[in-house]
Length: 356
Figure 1 (cartoon, rainbow, N blue to C red):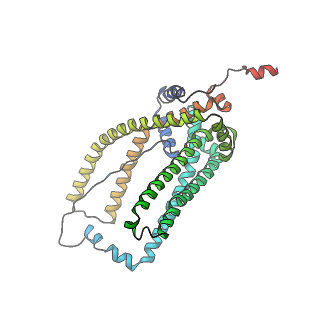
Figure 2: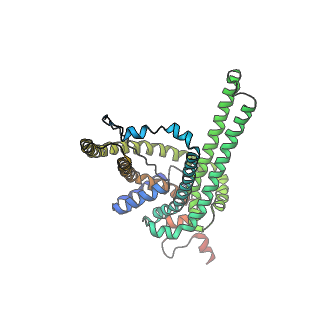
Figure 3: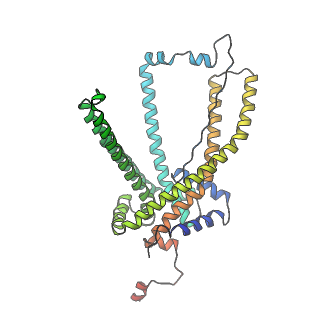
């Protein structure tokens, strides 16, 4: 029988405890951290800011030479170069989004397999789940394009309408229309954002298991899920509501723990950085291409340490939430139930018994 969103909490919690702590395995924990990070199941972030005081000298060098180049003048003298640079950055950015979307799509199936089997094997999972990952990737790109089109329609058309009426040219004369239109536009935009967010959550929680077990596309999985939603609106609405509550609670707890760990890490990292900086300052070094490159490399290393630490902290959430969706869906999806609650050898269902 289908279980409620509240009833699925305890088995998911027990599952996460058994998988992560009985026994504790650092290698499995680290692999789950990487898979959860790339699959988008956990959030991580970090940063470091530093300010350095360069002593003044009688000659221009280091930072002074860097700042004396006159960026506005260069921008005017070489517009084609800067336009080309911006175009390259845009293309590279789009390429990285597409690349990580594909990687995240495959990792989503690896995470699903890891939760079901209580074992995480990245290389085997990658070789096994590339086809399903590609199908999910197609769905993700389609959803991105649809969300972009919805943004253009919801924001672009009203803005164009207001511009043609001259509201932006003379805003003081159209304050009521701008205020009311802005409120309505915000509400519609918020509804669109929430709608796409719900579709994203439903896809990774309820469509991915179908794709993993039955080798179907995301579009076919959604057509089936739509029938389930219409048949049990209250159950799935309760799941979304409970997941929001759990996500808020987990987010607050993980934020507190993460900030504590970051502060503890900053103590030794800051001490080492201070010693290095005093040594560099005593040697009379200034900002050059080499020193800037070294500083950027050091910052990237520190950032990687923070990301790794926060990802490791977030592993319990990366295991609990997929397990939560799996146990909720398993009570409604027999193919998944057979994996979550395997029947003893030789047992048959009542329907199967009537056929013998």
